[in-house]
Length: 573
Image 1 (spheres, helix red, strand yellow):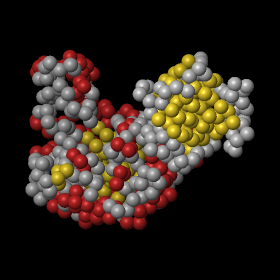
Image 2 (cartoon, rainbow, N blue to C red; image 1 turned 120 degrees about the vertical axis):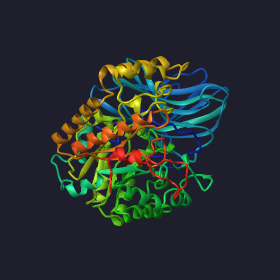
Image 3 (cartoon, rainbow, N blue to C red; image 1 turned 30 degrees about the horizontal axis):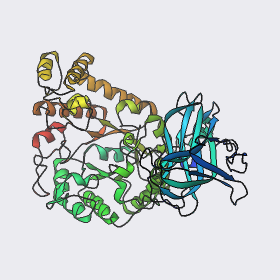
Image 4 (tube, rainbow, N blue to C red; image 1 turned 120 degrees about the horizontal axis):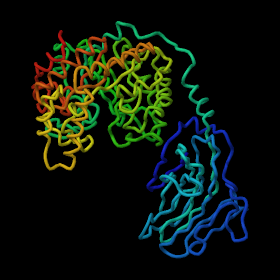
């Protein structure tokens, strides 16, 4: 824990363990002389290598309170550091590095890092391996002792870890270290930790038919409480403020959605405006705006999925960052508020949208989501939770997920397949999506040549885009049969685990998709979902290029629904 973080760039570790697992690793300190109570004749701490003896100085002060080692430079622009390499036991799955240090008068240099550094690195047979595990990068003078802890997963083939303390390319300065501690977490430790949040037996009431059927036909409304910077409201760029929340979507929009035959709204909510990232507390200044929106939706007889949907920078790739640990109790506080203000029969709580964006893949996501489910359930005992299989919530990812024992949980997937059709021309995707134009659905031998001819020429990914379409035809994925096979896999998972499934997002990027193909695809997917009784929430109402309105740029009160899209979706009042 950092008592006070100085004004410096603090880097983060490679892969994080949950905070509670950090509290109970299996072994004691693996660093020799990690408390710096033993000094060598040359002043260096016993057990540590002094790698820059001719360019800097190291003085161990074992009689100080607390004992510490002092690392400084002799000449401007030079490096001075100590390090220790430790061999890891074979059962090590995570390492936890904790350092207590302070620094003074560090003046930036003109080359290299130019800062004081506290960092580690995995090793393989004594050689550096992989990226750095950065604990701190500092200049200036600290306000007393600082304690930093970082946790990293042991990469495959790594059999050691090294800690390096000192300075790189600074003009002057001293780093003092009072404690360096290395502990490990084994697979047995991880299993014991996971068991705290995953009971052995299923528990709680299952999701009722009545509650599940409230999620039959829904629509996402993005750019409202999530990504408001994508829109303009009253002539200004949208933001996390009352004007955007009250003006972008009004009762007119909700009534139009309800009158069209939709039964619920999936409401993406970025936690940026609701979470104090330093303390993890629930911020309440704009919380009444979200409450007002939920009440407005409910007043039209629609159910609501409160989808926690981080898109702002503080939450991107948050796995391993302090914010990921604060996020769990924050969700509990948010769930308590929703339990006090909403009806569990009509409001659903979704753990985290597409966890891959936060660095959680299938294996790492399951234990983290178990913690989220536990925190939500403790504070909202009756609300149905919507969970997922990790990463980008694709159907195949769900197949590898073992559901949580809580039976009052629905599992969501996202369905944008075949993606060369649904995301043709999308600039945020891999480069080969960008030149795709006029890709039809279904893709057949009869229209393949025309589809390839429509690919934007002179693009570096033009050839790759053509190869992708040929592979798609060969696999038969771009057909109704391909859709049917994928949904059959999801239905089999649902039956095997006795868990309900919904499709939380699906749709087609409209910019380059042929209209008739888009309508045919929407119709086909809706039919396949109805055949299996899967509820769905289409992406999106009027933003991001997946809209169901004819005029997404118009303000609330002037938008109209695309009647052909509504017909293709098969919704009706």
